[in-house]
Every structure is written in C-alpha cells, then in structure tokens.
Image (cartoon, rainbow, N blue to C red):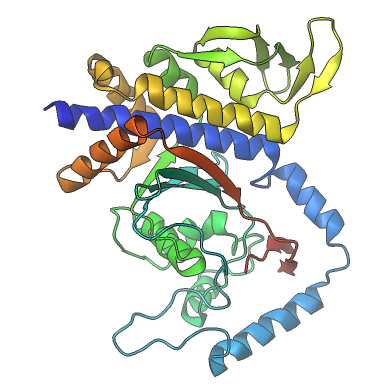
Length: 358
C-alpha cells in the first residue's frame, strides 16, 4: 500500500518539475511564443514561399528515391515522417524518458514540450527542450488526409506543437490511451530517436497549489528578488539568504530574471543564472519532498493532480520501476543537465515559419 501511495508523491514531484521546465521555456523564449514568432519573421524575410516549395519538392523527390530515408522492410511499419532525423544522440540507451506537455488554452496547442530522461546507469537526469515551431514532414498518406480534412494549409499545422491534432485527424492509435499523444510520441521517436515511456500533460496553474500542499521548499536565495509586472499579474518579493518558499514565492524564484537591488538599482541576472536557480530549486524539491514522509499528503496531491494533469503512469511493474527510480535519484544525488534543441535553419510553408532540426 505504501508503494502504491508513494507513486502519487512522485507524480506530483514530476509534475512540479515539468511545470518549472514549462515556465522556463515560456519565459526564455526557448519554446517560441509570440515575440519569438515575430523575431523569426524578421530574421527570415529573405525566405520566400517559392524557395520553400522547391525545398518541399526536393524532399519529396528524395523520399521517392530513398535518398533521405531508409526504405521500410516488409516487417516494419511505414514511417509517419520523411526527411532527416535529428543527427545527435539525445538520450542514453536504457534511460527512462518522460514527455512533459503544456497545452495552450485557446487553440489547444502543445506550446511547451520537454523530455525528462532518467539515466540510472550514469546517475544523470537530462532535461531536453523541444522548440514548438519544429517542422514535421509527414508522409504522403498523412498529408493527403490533412488535405482532405482542409487542414494542410492551415498556418502552423505542420509544427510539432500541432502534432497531436494531426494524430486526431488520422484517428491514430498507439501505446497510450490517448491516440493523439501516442502519435506525438511516435513522431518524437522517428524524429529524435527518443522512445517515450510515459507522458505528463500539465496545467501550469497547478504549480503554486502543489508546492503549497507539499509544505513549501527551503531555498538559499542568492540575492534580493524584487520585481513587479502588472501585465502578467506577477509580484516577486523575496529576501536573500535561507528562505522557506511557499507556492507563490517558489514561482517567483524560478521565474526571476530581472529586478531591483536593495539600493533601488536595476539589474538582470540573465538566462544562465536563472536556469541555475531553477535547477537548484528542482534538486532541493526532490531532496526535501520526494520521501515517504509525505504519504499523509496523498489525498490532496491526488485532488490537485486530478485538476491539473493527465498522465500515463500506471500500476504494477511501471509503478515499481518509478518508485525504484525515484529512490535512486535521491540516494545517489543524480546530476541534472539540460539541453535545448536549436537550429539556424528556417523555412516557410504556407505562410508560416518553421524551425528545421536535423
């Protein structure tokens, strides 16, 4: 029974980690938001629709001749995507890879996307951020289905943040109960050679509620954090030194990038320092809250998770493996590293700008 309950603690911990990652992405522009899209438009003014059409035609020709991908054998399923896969190895063999998803409320796009890869062999947790504007080049059958549904030329429909919608259009089914998320996981496997073992879809608003319910986190704040943004309804007011952060202050700590010193002078810490703070927060969260001492908080965690996340972590062997993994992360003080996928290569397709990761 304790093992069964412990998994809910760790789902909550993983959810908080994912929320931190998603806030990182939104704030730093790693996963391009509106400002990022405007910047892409400015930087790619010299890319014309006609040039993109030539690129697409060339890709199709390579697809037909087999130059750009290996042909499927008779015992292999047809690939969902064509074109080049990502060239760098992102995760180690045998690692457990969990996909974190943040969904936009307006268009139901997966605008924030990250993978947490737990490598037990090398005692490392790797966090990989995938740009939302990544171009996904589907096979001809899928493109025909999209065209039939009048979706193919919808601006941005071929971005990875829309992949789950594509899965819905073609009525895809796979390893997860959710066909659209199964489709996304299989596309990630083909594009990045990362097998997704589980997923957590997160409501970012649950961050403060989860931290409060876990009793807050003790953090050594490196400097005065004083910042106010009425547009975002954000108020950060944290003193330096060892502080006990509740949900509101924890959000401020992981989001702080600029503000005012005690003498009133303005300063910026930059993205590198902020990421350092965020990783420090995650490590302390795991050390302080990832224990069976929090079993009494299970009912509240379940309630919060029910309102804020959807996940695929089940019972049985999967449950046992996650408990063992969580224990190992704590006792062996795993190293936490991050990687943000990036490319200078851009194209325009049907009026939208895309990042090409190869």
